[in-house]
Structures are given as structure tokens and as C-alpha cells.
Image (cartoon, rainbow, N blue to C red; front, side, top):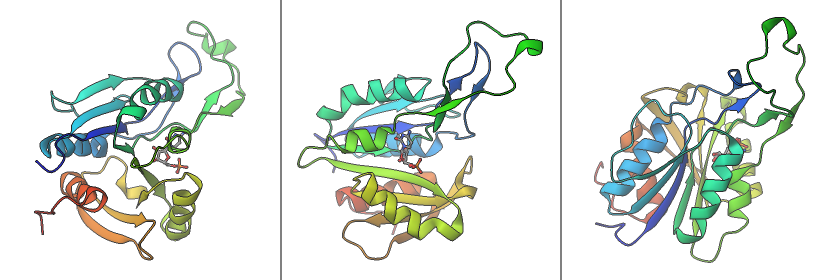
Length: 216
Ligand code: C5P
């Protein structure tokens, strides 16, 4: 078991920001990639902690799960686990904005505000990567428009202080299979893989942790 004795934190799924008791802003992330990563890390022997928003698929039992709703809750849960782990993979599709105020109860349609001021949510990957101690590895994901993918991915690797950044284009949302571009500090050009999310998870651990890739 190549990841025995290793602890891994994974964030996954979408987050939601509520405008009132029933209406929220979010995105269509299924959380499949995070569950594939959690399952693969577990099968490779790691102790896996998955902090997640609403998921379309169920993580395997031995994975320790921390269900949350908002970005702030995700940050609070991930911040508690982060100091203990060897590797953190920020796979969540965190909702970038939240309403400045969440209204109490279910507001009647007739009185619902037509304009809502949005403020940014905390960037969990950036905040935790800034707290990285030596030996800890952080991996981010980025969903990009194809035309901007290369430039934007390289910039995020730097600005978020990540060791690896995995970029995919918009077709990855909700999909079973996707193409990824894996950027690292060392490599000039990204590695490109197209496969099911389960196979991609193995390729990611092969690259990030030096685990032998048995799918070759
Ligand atoms: O900047 P962008 O949202 O494209 O960055 C994506 C990466 O940053 C992903 O790894 C995502 O999980 C993480 N992220 C985060 N908190 C946010 C926004 C993004 O952890 N508020």
C-alpha cells in the first residue's frame, strides 16, 4: 500500500450560499472527481478526510467525511484537518461569491430584493497553502475556458502557492470522463490525460506522490 501512513485532505463538491432560507447560489459540480480521489487514496492505503458540499455520488465508508454547505464552513472544517495531513487536494467547486446578507426565513416572492450585493467567499486553497509546512503538498484544480487554460493554470499555480494544479475545461462539469492538464512546479509543459475520473485519480497520485501507475 504505497500511501500507508499518509493522511490526505480532499475538498469536494459545490458549496452553496443562501440568499434566504430556501434560495441559494451555487454551481452544478457533482463532486465525482473528489470522490474518485478519496476512494483511490483510500485504496492506496491513506487515511482520507473528505470535506464536501452536496455530492451526487457517495464516498466509500472508510473515508472520513465532513459535510458542509458554505465556503466558510468548508474553510473551518478543512483548517482543522490541514495541519495533520501530508497532502491536501482542493477539488471543491467553491462558490466564489455570497450575498452580503442572508435574509431570515423564506422571503415572499413579491418582496424578494431585485438586486443583491455579493461579496467574495474565502479562498480555501490559498489560505491553507499559505500555512503549508515543509513536506506538505497542496494540489489545486481549475476549471478554465479552453483558450485561457494554459496561461490561467500557470498563474493559479503561483498565486495560490500550490505544488500542482490540475486544469480542465468546462466540459468536465458533471461529466463521467474528462481531459486534464496537470501542471507542476518542475515541469515546463503540463501532462495531459483523458480518462474516467477513477483512472485520472490514479494518474494524479502517480504524479503527485510517485505511486506506480498501473493503468499504463
Ligand atoms: O480561482 P479558482 O476558483 O479557479 O481556483 C480553483 C481552485 O481553488 C480549486 O482548487 C478550488 O478548490 C480552490 N478554491 C478554494 N476556495 C475558493 C475558490 C477556489 O479553495 N473560494
